[in-house]
Length: 427
Image (cartoon, rainbow, N blue to C red; front, side, top):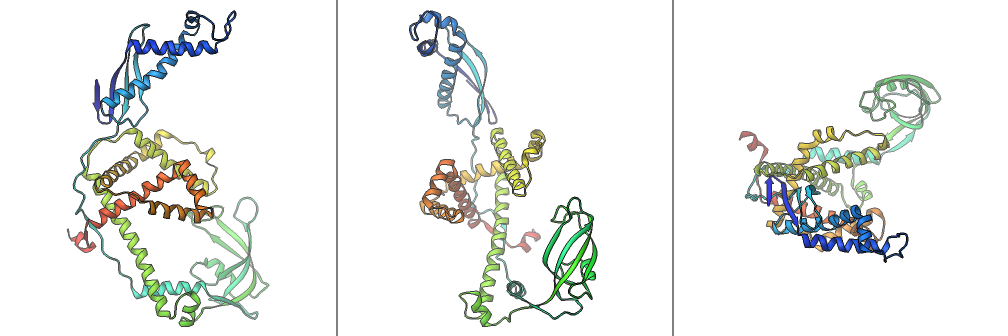
């Protein structure tokens, strides 16, 4: 008999006496074949002695062999898809009698998928202004700038100074030193204290400057500190930008005119904007899906999701050079803080899977091959070797799942009613 509460199930199972007796006999013979008992060669000791001496082990092994088997059969009869490790309780064992036990576990939720075509979502095809194109073109131009050394003279605003920097106060541990740093006097990324120190200096001069860094500064040893620097001016240079003409365009690649470059930039900016707009719209559609469907979610799925989220956070910290082995994790607090997000993510995954199944969305071999080839190029390894590794570690299935998810999100977006931002605000 099965008792149901959300995704939690309780199932009472019986192992017939004859099945238990046969398994006990089988385990007894297995132990007898290997047992070393004084006065008997291995495999020759009487079964009665084996049963007496190894009674606890025989019982344990017999139950370990039969409990999963009969539980699986019971779940199949009940059409239950178990998604968590069963907890076995109230097990009653008496020699020569049937064994009764209760199993508690979680099953995959059953729910009806509502109509997902025609959902309303805020989206409008992005526009790209001429100013945005010119700004991007200017960035490309800046990246190809050349620096021309100037004859010695007092440095002024707009000059690019090649300097050596050394901390003389304000940092813990050894001083920080860097040579051949380019600093633009009065540049947008230059601290005013540095600019002030360099104004009027000539190559060879040594100046000092005190800089107060914000708390969120990217260099940890400087963040939130007031640091004093010794600055040695080595060279004054002028930044020369290339002329934006057809010759510049041809130097960039397969272009014949600067207008072709502008058009390619416009397309690139459009793709970037449209990608961001679609991501936002697709996230909105997923949120709508989750809000539309109310069904229980297995705690086992939520815990797996939280562990996945934690693993991602730890990997990110490791990439930043943090020794994660020294981090103490309060699992209960972590679970509490991330529970709702994890539950939302699990529901979203289940719903997207249901949509994919109903709409027959799947990953083609060509799509899988393209992704494997992309990974192989990224890793600079043979495609066959990469595929073999992915098959062994489950990465290939991850690729398949990602392709299906992406295609399902595209399906929802393609079949949604797009509402311009202005109309959405009016509603």
